[in-house]
Image (cartoon, rainbow, N blue to C red):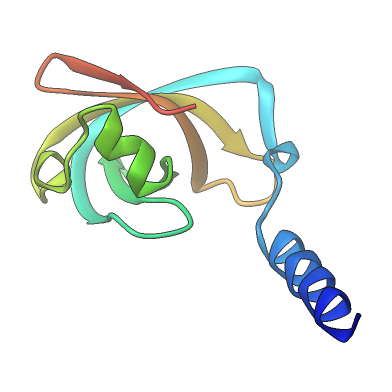
Length: 112
């Protein structure tokens, strides 16, 4: 019984640590194009820092397993690569957006 209680607590803690998508404004899609300055192919979500004009966006991508399954490799997110992202801006962090899809070298990858 203690084991079950510990597992329930662990799962609840992990769920609260993961942010919800409600913090992104899904009513106003945003398309941003620019150059990748940095990327991470890590859990729980990959990311890129995308320099677009005078603003650098933190773009939250999908989990690495999903990106890999859909053909978006870490090499495709290399520094200096041009990318176009369609997604939603964070309501509280104006430099952050959640990506629905990313296009690199003419290849579009659905992330959600």
